[in-house]
Image (cartoon, rainbow, N blue to C red):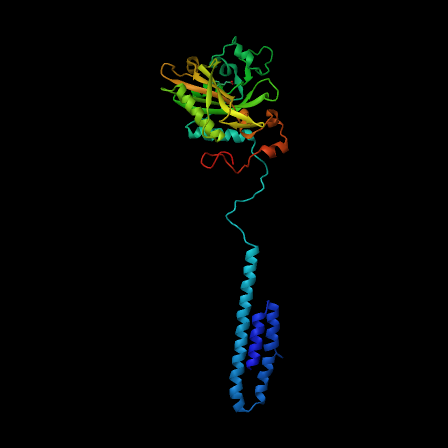
Length: 357
Ligand code: PHE
């Protein structure tokens, strides 16, 4: 009996899978199994012999049975561990959803600009793309004879013969939204106005439709220093660099006095633009202190209020930040271009988690 016990316990301990274990069970405890046959022999024994052999055989049977059960559980555990090793899953990984489309760089940059100026206390205002010439020109101190009207390459809306209403134009800049916002909301005021503008011009850096963002801040104590600080903060946040030098160049716009065009320090490295370092300067916007006549046209008393304004090309700063060489491609609706330069719809630009990821 000791031999039987040693034999089966060794076999059980060596069994490598459940099928082998089942073979051992049948060989030992099956109907014709070795231990079962021994049990049948009990009937032929004398009562004295049976009293000794009976309990011993039962004990052997129990022992082999428990060893089988324990080994079976052990094999199942090992199999599960093996599966867990190959089928593990990191549930903390971000989803990998297939985006059906992408956000156009212009939309992305408009959102980035809005997020930065929102942080500085500016709200977003909008105006119509078909504008009357009073809002687009006169109210901005550009009267009919002014040369700036000619320089703007204006698209005029069709007028029927005999129609003497004031002409409408496709707005040539976002500055008319300054006037609309002043008239609507009064002072103090702190707004940006992103949107489409139109000029009859077409080459690698000009398209007949492009995008600007206007900025306007009006209060009782506003100076060029405020303009400079706001623009510096903007450029740092937008280009995601710490030290950026801005250069203010005296310029002229009918609607600001004094006026300045603003350049940022940069370098070109193998056609790659680096903002904030180097010996080159790049013009990014026009700006100045709002002309008293413009405040008046907006219904705001220039004796009490002052303000600064600026106008920046969205397409231009998008090209600079994301290294997009040809402006015209922005508006070709070429899917390959859109997939390459587009942004994930799930990443909303905000200052806390980063503007562009
Ligand atoms: N409207 C000007 C342009 O389109 C830019 C500008 C806006 C300049 C506000 C000064 C102040 O070029």
